[in-house]
Length: 335
Image (cartoon, rainbow, N blue to C red; front, side, top):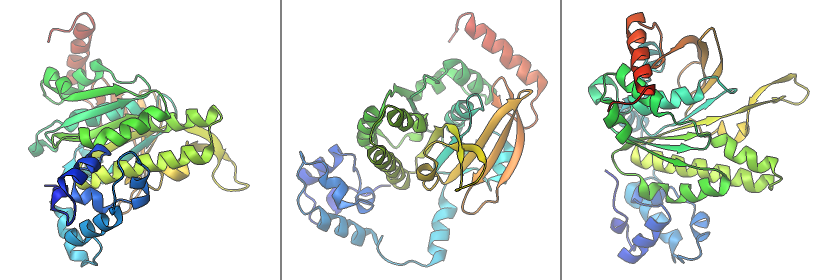
């Protein structure tokens, strides 16, 4: 459980209220902050913020060296989220750890939004089935959220489709200013019940601003702040952040040949704990590649895309039943 701000030496109830208004809701989150970032919010005028951050770090021992075995014990207690495909979970050494940042990047129609839908549903599975028994937030920058996909995937995983829909909250984000505003308020809106936050598509929001002539340094700084805020929330709450990114044609290194690269790649690549590269489906099979993870070797597999999402070996009887359910929903949802 997160530690209350009021338990930090010197932090009064009034100061704690100011910190919560800018999205810092626990002592753990305070300990990760840069005081200059907090001074940016001049309207709140939080004095002695340097001392409060130091006090939080001292209380939580976050500035002290620790044995690696202690870190190992903490990791062993973390939950992991199933992808819905046992073969992928095995390759990921059990699934996606809570408190992670997950990036899917690839061209249009490569399956990025499909994966977002799939994880938003599997996160609601009970823990004994590899889920987190939680809720999801969907930050939609591409109008990609599909109730039909969610309901069909819920049926695939034997979940109540109405309850799954009820446990997903959505908001449309249209530009960089909007995501920055929502980013700063996000942590105060996240409850303990939220297990996954989807941002589809994060890279697009900042790429659009650059295309309109906005200052590159400002856009890059805001993207970094956004990812850092996601990381702060993930570390202190265990929420998994899933975001998508587009690609463009460019050179990875000077004088190298033109290739497909993720937008804002050098900024987003360093923040993601799991980075997945997707390619367009060929004959309804998508190329799925774990491109980067600190402790898992890269792997590359072909996955069929059917009704209900991605599979390893789809069951034709199940697919047929899901198709019938989807058709009945299109003709008029019954629940």
